[in-house]
Image (spheres, rainbow, N blue to C red):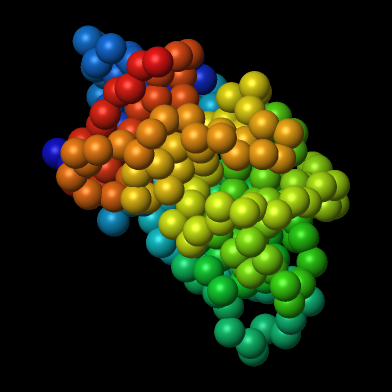
Length: 248
């Protein structure tokens, strides 16, 4: 079965999201053992998974499914079309396509919808609240938490912006190497900020300056869909469903 996304689980193992959307596979970083996590309902065209000790967060283009690991059931399903843009009337169009989402250590989720100049937070009860207000110079491209701070790639300004838990902008800096195919690693280590380009490069950000973590990765069959850093290894998922392990 084709892997469409992956993430680090709370115990450091890999959670693999498969194309059928009926189950996930949990493996150790040596791929020597596997556990299957069956879902109570099929998720059509899944695109991203994140996890903490209590929940799995599995998204397709229009919904986020919140799976309770103890109850083995979906605690809640978030329909993006039902979240009214804050401050707008009910008759106006509602962005319904998920662009990206990230999971805070506190358990809160922040998401961006395609074409919307704001972010939405799901609180600890998974109710939507506004995270940032409308801005005309704001076009999210990718987002990821590192600790309690949310890092966001703002495509419109070719910058990385940093927000605290209250949604306040606390830092911003330009990216001289910015490209529209750049994405954050979904799980950010504490030592630095990691990004990848879909064309095959990995980057590390230290004190606002980029240095290449690895040379351009050759012989990839397809674009990079996601990348993870665990201990001294990188795990690269490509669009053909293959996972590459690079140890330095």
